[in-house]
Length: 146
Image (cartoon, rainbow, N blue to C red; front, side, top):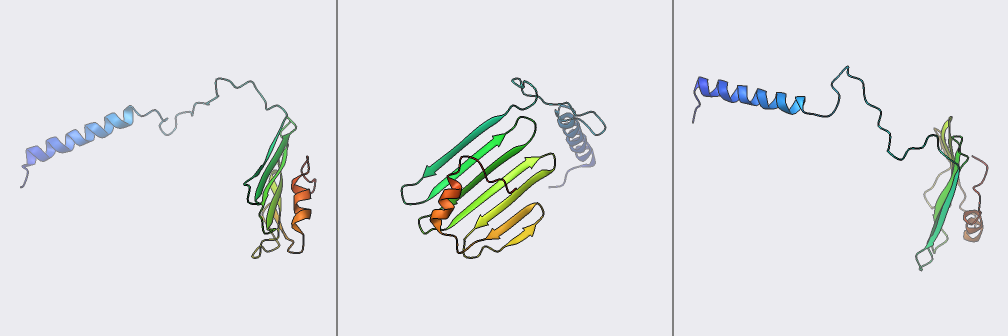
C-alpha cells in the first residue's frame, strides 16, 4: 500500500517533532553546555584514612583474601588473592596514588609467565610452596614492594 505525498509529509513531520521533543526533554547537557558536577549528598570532603580486609574459606581448601589501607592523603595500598586446595595461588600487591595504579602479581599458576607490562610486574614462582603463599596472604599489612 502506497502512501500519498501529503500523508508522507505528515508522517515525516510527526517523526521530526517526536525527535525534537525527545532531545529537548533529555537531561544530559547539549554540546557546548557545562556539565554539572555531581556530588553525593553525604560527601564530607577529602577521603579519610581507612583499613579494611577479609579472608574467606570455601570449606574445600580454597581461600580468598583482601586487605586495603588508605592514608587519607590519596595513597592506597593493598593486596588480594586466592589459594586453592592444590596449592595454586595468585597474590596481587598494589599501590594507587597520584602516580597511578601499580601492581606486583605473584603466582604459581601453570601458565603464568613473568613479565612487566605497563604499571604491573608479574612474578612467576612455580617453586613457591602453598604454605609460603599463605604466610604472605595472612600478613596484616601488604608487602611494601609496590
